[in-house]
Each structure stands twice: as C-alpha cells, then as structure tokens.
Length: 294
Image (cartoon, rainbow, N blue to C red; front, side, top):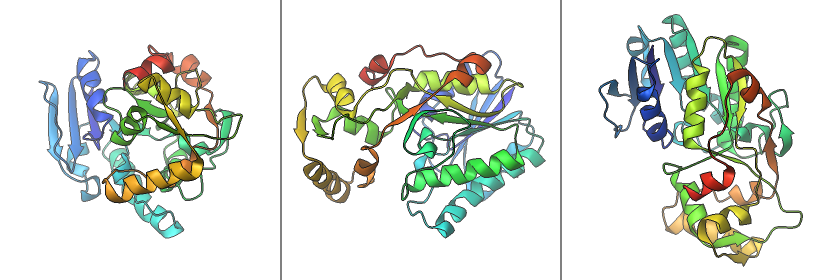
C-alpha cells in the first residue's frame, strides 16, 4: 500500500510516520507539508508543498490519503466566512484524492467537535464551543466529508499526549499551576500518540468507514493531569489563571488560545466502543501512563 500523509510535519506526524513505515502492509509513505519534515526512512519520501497548492500529481498512484489537519492549517477566527475559507482547501484535497482514484481516505479530526459532552458517541450532535475556531472548522469539514465521501474515516481523538505532543499540551502539563474550578471539576480524556497511530493504521482497512472516537477510557481533571506530570501543584483562581494565560500568549510567544480556560470549565467525555468493536482498536497506554510520557 502506498500512503500519502498531508500536514506530515505536524506534532503527531512524528509518531505516525514511523508507525506507517514499520507496518508490513505499507510499502511506501509520502509526507507532504509546507514545512520541512524531520524524518528519514527507506520507505519514506518527503514533498515540501502546501496542501492548498494542489496535490493532483502527488496523489496519483496512491492507495490511501491520511490528512492530519494540524492547527496551523486552520484559521484562528470563527466567523462563517473564515470557517468556510479555512475548510475549502481541505475539502478540495479530498475531492482531488477521490478523482485520482485514492481508495482509502482518513481524516484526523478532534473530539472537540462535540463541545461539552458526557460519553458522546459518534451519533451525538456536533456542537463545538462557540469561538473555538479549530473545532468549529473541523465540525464543518466533517459534515461535508460525511455527505461527499461516506467511506472516509474520520478519527475523533481526545487530547493527544506522548513524547511528541503539541508544544502547548507539553507546556501545560509541565508547569505547576492549575485553575481552581468549581466542584465537581470537569473531566477529560486523552490518548497516547502511539495508540492513535495504531488507530490510523487500522483505519486503512477496507471495512473501516465513518467516524470513530479515540481515547483512553479513564477520565481525569485538569488538576489530576498536571499533578500526575509534576508531582506538586499550585492552585490559582480562575481570574489569576486567565491572566497568566493571556500573559503567556502575549509576551512569551506561547502558541495558546487565551480562551482555552473557558473550555476547560466543561466536561468532555467520549465513548470509544465503536472503534473497539469495529476497528479492533485498543489502548496500550492508560491515561496515567500516557500523561506521564508527555
């Protein structure tokens, strides 16, 4: 199988590319990104090209497309116009892949498309947090893909953790401060990057289709997550935590949305039974082990 991975220089790409190249079912992996891809392997070939630059030539002869949809591929604003403008190039990519005869289509979405949720399954409505541009754009793209390409696999992972987690996630878990939230505190889940990479590999099977939630079963509070990684923590009022986040975003060049704290006050839990039963997917890492590896 020849696999094309777009946005391959994204954080998760550093876990996925080696996993694809280790698979006996994969003969060749091509990574596409506007940025340099720091990975080498006999099966791997890098193409430095933006997704919106048109990939018809690169897609020709590929058996599978895996689109990682990194945060930098989407706009930060969330008006109707910017959502549509951000989604259009990615939607066109899937149209080009289909026209080129690519049989397996896999899109990496996010569990944030559900918004506040308790044990959301794949049939739950998509109601992303208002103003969370990335989740709003992913939800819009998913609706288009479901209509145009029902066979396309749409993975919805919770927070991706592990050695190559997004810099913002690593920064959050490695600092000692946490917001003191009202009880009962909101609950979250996560998934280790290697477990998510396995889900991508399983998604290349011809029987895989539609949406799949991906996360470790255990849930935790934000305080639990920081304490598990640091061992000691300092509680801040929500107002003080918000000021700290704004300062980091403005003066420390931290790639963090100052409004993330608003979203951290809501529980987001997903049900992964469909991935377990249909994909035969399972977690090798518990939530505690995955957080400790980040």
